[in-house]
Length: 329
Picture 1 (cartoon, rainbow, N blue to C red):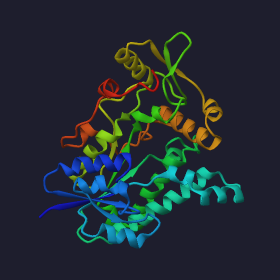
Picture 2 (cartoon, rainbow, N blue to C red; picture 1 turned 45 degrees about the vertical axis):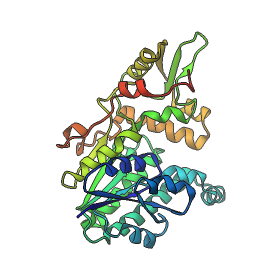
Picture 3 (cartoon, rainbow, N blue to C red; picture 1 turned 30 degrees about the vertical axis):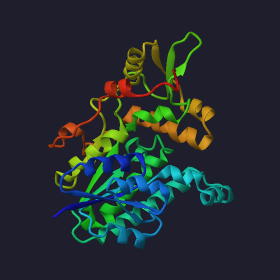
């Protein structure tokens, strides 16, 4: 009898990777949740053999229906969609609360909806929750604006405290810093200098190794590995070995035949480059995980090489070699 994985956010970077892997996995069927399965954009997914069902993270009942029959559920929430929400933008203007804080609250509520719905699924074996470390906790209050980390951590705490049966089936995946973040814009991309060389500027120490991942390719491998071991793991999903930003740029230069280097900037620089809400959030994120570790150096977190089953990953040298850098070169 086939097993069924239900993927929340199947059209996103992580969800699409999970679908890719499980479509090739013998004995598994794939179901994805989307707000509107009838949209033309859904056809490429159904053509690949993915069952699409209607579901809304603001509607627990719709999620319960979508989850029925699941052997495994991949749960992910999107903090950043709140930034684009007219409702949250209006509330921020009315209350004076930072929109980041409202996105934090909204993401927690969506995470709870998913968890409550999953808790009612008979026969569920694995609940895999895409989450991140608690920056406020692990930095001992030094970094208080990494809202998109802390919101996800709060959902995990809530499940453990309020849904003990689901917690017994839960594994947590902390997907590392996206290697593709440079595509978001000049603030995070290698920038050409007047002398023809390239520099990347981030509020990070140049020589501290950090975990990076080719998310679109490797997330599915992390999730597959978590379905092959007993629940209860917290996995930091990254590619190959951790790498410093100086080494990342050295490889960038080597692959592209250019002179390249990394230079630290500050959180304040990020606030000047990006809109204030984004600048402080992302600036504190980079500073936090450079200083305290992406996982906060949580002793319960394991790496792909420690999970006990095969878990292929993409090294950063391989990623850089195969990436299309034409937009910055």
